[in-house]
Each structure stands twice: as structure tokens, then as C-alpha cells.
Amino acid sequence: MKSTKKSLFITTIAMVVLMVVALSTATFAWYTSSATATATSASLQAAQSSDANIAIGWANDAKTTTIVFNDAAQEVAPMVPSAALAADAASITFQSAPIDFESKFGAVTAGIPWTVKNAAVGEEAQPGYIAANSKTSFFVVNNNVNAAATVKMTATFTGDNKAGLLIAVFVNGELKAVLTERTDYKVGPVTTGQDSSLLQSKTDLIVDPTEGFTFDLAKDSDSNDNYAEITINAWLDGNWLTQSYAGGTAGFTFDFAGTTKA
Image (cartoon, rainbow, N blue to C red; front, side, top):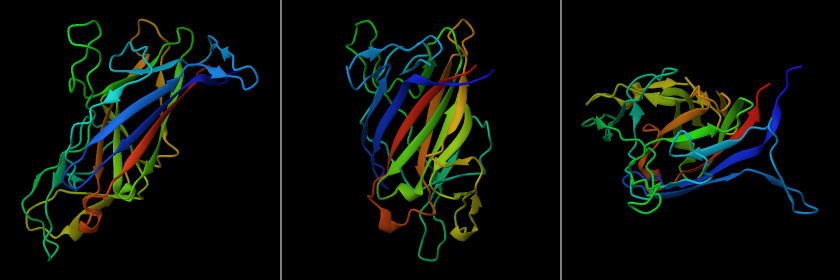
């Protein structure tokens, strides 16, 4: 009989993101637990061979349990994708522009979303050293040699601007979901002099962050399918983000939970 088993190894990622109209700084810490503890004896129970064994790191063979993002500033302006989003797309092009008192767009510029940047790991010239800002993605790895895993990614949003927050998640270079509490988001194209009311509303790929989405990882072997590379584009909906929200914050917490596949 086919069945799935809950993992004793659940990866939890805690994030706080400061997203403002002009400037953004943030520090992130990622946490995971590889075993459980009983309340009576506080003894550790090792994961069985049939349990998922998930790690997070900057490389596809990660065994680490913590990664930290760089806290350098990243600018996040109001923006919209230039076109409707497509499943498995390799990238998103964003546009940004000021809106005048007649709701007309001014000069159009490229929108720059929030993306992953790593803090330095270790000491320079030492084994395992990773220079700051040299990574733009991270890896979720199934280190179980006996069983494949299904990983569920969920999120919790917080902050004054959470209602305008959207997070596009790419798995192995393909767009899989847009995590947001919104029921839709605006897309362009944006052109100078255009009325902002002409932006299109789209619902493609929207996933409630608390419900999340799943992806599969093979068992640890020579197949190279036991890991997934994760990249992120986070932005504040340009049509929603009015001047009254300038300087507000939006935060999010990611959670990755693994179950074995029969």
C-alpha cells in the first residue's frame, strides 16, 4: 500500500523583511531541526531511514541547518510585471513609474525586486568560505538515500504592507507559484502617459501563502534530482502601493516541511 510518512526533519525558515518605497534593509536567519525530543525524558529520537531528511544551504550537497542573508540595502519601489506571468517561466521583467495627479504614468524604469543575497560564510582563505553577495539562490536538499521526498513550502506574511506583498518562487529555474494574500495582482505593459487604470488584473499562479505548494525531490543518489534550487522575486504591487504606505514594512516567514514518498 502506498503511503506517506511525516518527516522528523522539518525545515523552518524565519524571515523579517523591511520593504519600503525607497530603501530596504533586512537580516534573515534560517532554522531547521533534524530530530525530535520527547517531553518526558528530553532524549533525542533519530530519524528512521524512511523519513525525509531535508537540509538547506548555498550548495546542492548541503548538510547545513542554517543560512543567513546579507543585510545590505536592496531598493524596492512600487512595480508590476510587464506582462502576464506564465507557469515555468524562467524570469520576470518588472516595470516601475511615478503616477501624476491625473493617474498618468511618468517615465518608465526597470523595476528591481527583492532577491536573495548571502552573508559571508566562514573566514576568507579558510575551507568552506563563501564571499558575501556571491549567491543569489539557495538549495533544499533531500539527504535520505532510501526514500524520495515531497516538500511543501508555505509562508506567513506580516507588516503594514503585507496586503501588497507578492513573492514569486522559482524552483530549478522555473516559476512555480506567486505567494500572496491578494486575490489578484496588476501587470503591464506600462508606458509613459498611460492611464494607470488600464493595468490588467491577473490571478495566474496565485497561491495562498498559508496553503503553499509542493515540489518533489528524489532520494539521495547520483541522479542529481535530490535537490531543488530556489530563487525568489518579491515585490509590492505598484497599483496597490500608494503614498500613504510609503515607509511601511512587509515581512514573511517561509516554512519547508518534508514527507517521504512511498
